[in-house]
Image (cartoon, rainbow, N blue to C red):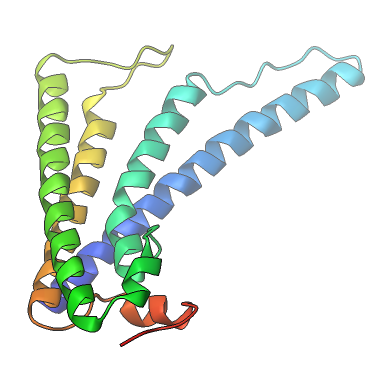
Length: 185
C-alpha cells in the first residue's frame, strides 16, 4: 500500500510539472512569435503575426491544475507552510495531539473541497461549459484536474493522519526538524 500511495503522489507531481512545462512552452512560443515579428518589422518585412490564441486561459487552467496536483507531494515533502514554532516548544505528547487534530481537521476540510470541486467539474461537464477565450475548451477539464489534486491531497492527509495515530511522526518530520531552530522533547 505504501508503494502505491507514494507512486500516486509522484505521478501527480509529474503531471503538475508537465503542466508547468506546457505553460513555459506556450509562453516561449508566444515570445518567439513576437521576436520574429519584431525582427521582420525592423528589417522592413511584413510581420507573420504569430500568436497563441487564448494563451491567458490556457496558462491559467494549466497553473490551476499544476497547483492542485502538486499539493500532496509537497505535503509529503514538508514543503507546505506550517506553523512549526509552536510544535517545537511544546512537549512531545502535546505535539502528537496537535498533529492528530491538525491532520484530522485538514483531511475533513480537504475532503469537502475535493467534493465541491468534483461537483463543480461534473456540473460544468453536464452543461457543456467552455472557456470564454477565442479558443474554447471545456472547463470541466481543468476543473477535473483541480478535483483530482484535491482528492489526492485528501488521501495524503489521511495517510499522514493514520501514521501519526500509529505513533509514527509525519513523513516530513525529519526534514522539518533538520531546519528547526531548536527542538524540545
